[in-house]
Length: 215
Image 1: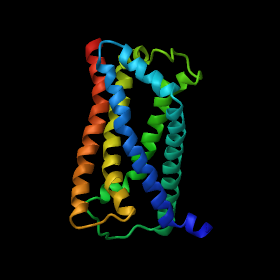
Image 2: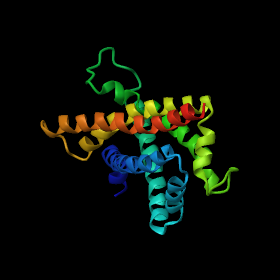
Image 3: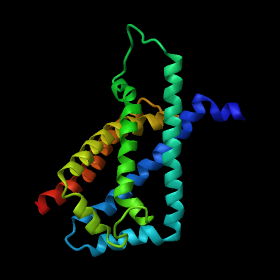
C-alpha cells in the first residue's frame, strides 16, 4: 500500500487532483474580490464576513489549505525525484511545445508560494489576529494596501507568473488523470490558455484600478 501511495504516478495523480481543486477555487475568489471595484464597501465586506463566518466555508477553508500544502509538497517531491533521476543534462533533448512551462513549474510555483505568504500577511493573518488591521473592513485594508506602487508591482508580477503556472498545470492535470485524447487534449489546452489569461488579468485589474483611482 505504501509503495502505491509513494510512487511517482500516485504522487502526480494526487498533486493533479489538488491542483484542479485549487483551479476551481480561483474563479470564486476572483468573483468576490471584484467587489472591491465597487465604490460602496458594504457588498465586499458582507461577502468577506460570510466567507469568514459560514460553517461550511470554514470547512472548505481547511480543505483549501490542505490542497495547497498537498500540491506544494508533492510538487517538490516530484521535482527532487526528477533531479535525482537525471543528474546530468542531456546534450540534446526532445522538447515538446509545453516543455518550457514544465521546466519552470517548480520556480514559478516557488515564487507563487512566497506571494501567498505575503498575501496571507496582508489579509488572512489579520482575520486570525496575527497582524494589525480591521478584520471587519477588508475593503479599506485592500484600498490602503494597493495605493502602494511597490505592492502593486509585487502583485502584478506574481499574477503574470501565476498565469504561466496555471496554463501548464490546467491541461497537464487532465492528462495526469487520464484524459488524453487527440480531440479533447487540444480543446483542454485552449480552455487552459483562456483560463490562464482571464484569471490573472482579473486579479491584476483590482490593484491597478485601486492605484489609478487613488492616485
